[in-house]
Length: 196
Ligand SMILES: [Mg+2]
Image: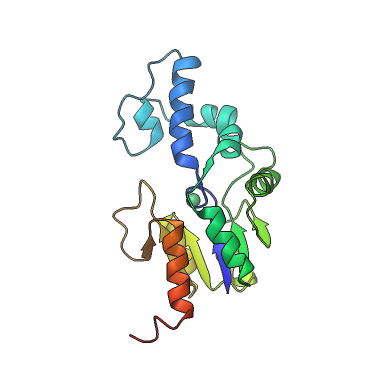
């Protein structure tokens, strides 16, 4: 199988790190009091920031955030097991050069540092369909609904990785963690799907 995998909030917990760093930034740089509304949908609303603060904050901190984002539980173990079992691992990330000097090297350095095996890495993608088709991806895993939608529309099977914001989405098969990804692939390869 060829498995296409997103980075942020699929392999690493980027959004959680953004909130932690935004809280610090608000207190240390802006002289604020940190998070104002923990239940807000977007982190700028959470911080009570004007919309234009997002760009300033990202220009200052996004590279650090991505470089220091924590790996999701079992991500390394499952991805490496899938790789060792003969599957191809294609990392497909939307990460842009806008706030990061070199998103490609940042990403491969992070993957190498965490010991994750992969065959190819793409950053700064558009809707991700081209990279999936080009590499013959059979299964695509992403936390973002719009990416799942585009890739699914190209006839490729997708798994929506649960994040803080996608709980209401029900068009795609959902996985909550990496162990579930592994069980799903095992079951699928054992003919679990064709038998019912
Ligand atoms: Mg993502």
